[in-house]
Image (cartoon, rainbow, N blue to C red):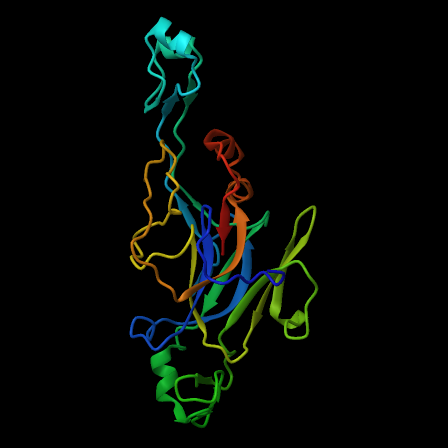
Length: 286
């Protein structure tokens, strides 16, 4: 979509970075919502009470010998099996020019679309659904000293201190100029050689964003599981072989996407991109 927001849908690629809105679910009542974004250096940590907008744990790869492209003639002559296996190639596999790949370490990937910096999502621990609910005077109105950052019904009313900023209810990643609802006062940007990317935030009365996730396809209900698109097999030499989720958390909706090779390149994994040699352009979403 032109505005960078996409509906939650199955992706064909590595991951999606998703937002999750606050809902009347006890699982989110104690979660501080996102109140804004800041940029920090690629090697730095996010400040206190903030988390990465983009975060994907690359599991690392095992040392692998790939003989899948060896001709049948050479395989028979040197007694080589035309497959791949973990560990270095032996002498015969080296003679027939099997691919000999060193293992790659596990890494945390935190940068997006050629950004030189990380983007951190700030949270205010004083702003939770439980605290907001306790400060409701009546639907759409808050007690003295508080303001309503939500809607007009009791479920939508979200009360915060009058001096605090309202939590973020929407995020857009775009290279267009600010529109009427996304003014220069509520976006940050970074520039690469080709484009300027702007990350906009709004307090539009929608429910606050409580969680962010980088993932392939939809987000799994089991937060310990890293999803992979149905019909796709994970890389054979990955240390952590992913499988498709059996249940999804449909509270997440995608806000932006990138290709797998582009995402790896942004995070300085060009050699890994060439080694993995993905057979198609995979989509990574935020």
